[in-house]
Image (tube, rainbow, N blue to C red):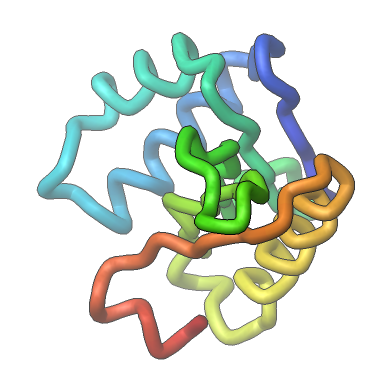
Length: 126
């Protein structure tokens, strides 16, 4: 199941905790789970695309927002960040599915470009 949170909407607390945990497991050195929960609950700057398992557990996440800077041709752009798939679910095409959804959402919004932000060790996946 795919979930999308629009700007200014809120997630249920159990989903916020699952997102925070997934992000923490991917990047434990950046922020604590509690800090991530606060950030997710209070952030209205972006959309989050999630993939849920049949049991309702968050197994993949992507943060999508509009770039504040236009390209040299004046077209607006989107940025896909914080892309993570649960370690047990990797290799099943879930990351590719999230990026495909992000591309479609970018087109729907009229963004001319979609940038993917990734840590150097993850570049090979994109």
